[in-house]
Length: 312
Image (tube, rainbow, N blue to C red):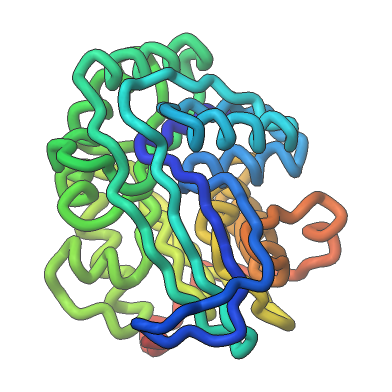
């Protein structure tokens, strides 16, 4: 079982507009509403590929109720925890030329009692040795070390912990020694306060993090694929993409694919890349299914070309 913990989920509304000029009246032509939140997306990706998962997250108000309804309609196993605040709604304005404008709210503050309820729910829906994915931004006014305080609690219960967040929250989490983190190049750069311009820089940064107590690093690198590093292995891989329709949830699919796979890390990383490449060819936050992933190719190597320059 894989349990995801999303502390700051959202209801994501996307409005199609003919054009967007700040300060003017904008008339929408179409609206879609989808579940949002990194942990929520990991659970959705796992469900789409028949992998057992439970999504734990706080819900409040009508937006929270709608989020739960949308996920249940998809068949996602959810364990919502009722909180006093209101689940945030994020807005995206989408233009025909592909330009998007996003307005993301901070989310409501969680009380200590509500956080305890969420952790209890994660533990009750998992068993020793299971993966717990704690991911996404922190809600408003949350202490920046919130993930860091949860890691020892979950590990003491025998769970393996993945953290996928950014900024100060990621820096604090790293200091607590999670089993796995999944940063992108920009997040790595901020984390170690050094420029990340090549695969060699990524390798150096990841090895530094592993030496500091992180179990493993899965670095998502966009068109340059992904790099996995732990104390024993360093594996780089790529998967070709024909048409990029949306990168929403691609990193979440990468992580889900890795956690859902068995065997050697080479095979697990290749599978994760197939999941991610399939996701970017789908619109919105749609998650790929086994048929869409099966035909996908991916290549991995332990001979990492350290001179490969990353796209910025």
